[in-house]
Image (tube, rainbow, N blue to C red; front, top):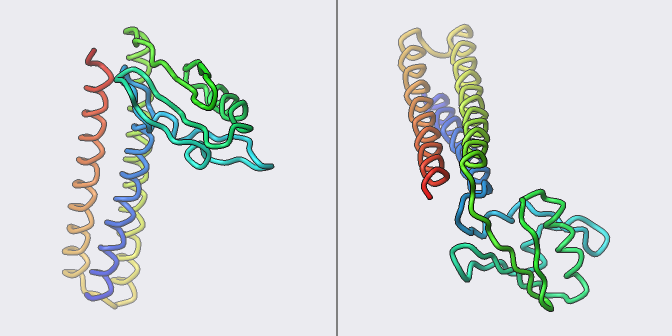
Amino acid sequence: MAATTHNLDELKRRMQGAIQVLKQELGGLRTGRASASLVDHVQVEAYGSHMPLNQLATVSVPEPRLLSVQVWDRSMVHAVEKGILAANLGLTPSTEGQVIRLRIPELNEERRKDLVKVAHKYAEAARVAVRHVRRDGLDVLKKLEKDHKISKDDHDRDAELVQKATDQAIAEVDQALAAKEKEIMTV
């Protein structure tokens, strides 16, 4: 039983990993409000390689509908602008010295619905990832029972624990999706 308990903790950790990825992806979806996480995935061609924006600048939210990107190295301002444009965020950079301002436009109804569809896609990918972890866990239990390392009762009990962990993870995915959907649809 000790091996399967550790196995359950590992499965839960992997399921939480899928949920964290979902939360990151949802954080990157542009709603009507400014959020520093909108530019988390922006890559900039700098110093001969691709670097995340947060390694070249400080991102702040001075107003609810404005992002401010303070570039540390003056020679990188143009590269950061290009990176922001290449990320297809639908934001137009406005540069003043080493500060790049990104106005967050109002979302129309059609764009909101599109964003909700994208959020649903992200959530479904997370659900699939959680189900894959469940399948892996159940496969391990089947093998342990087949190799006579655990009894049928232990197998059934542990399979039930794996299913409970799966249900809990799926519920977390659904909660994160519902919260993001509400955020996107409220004006």
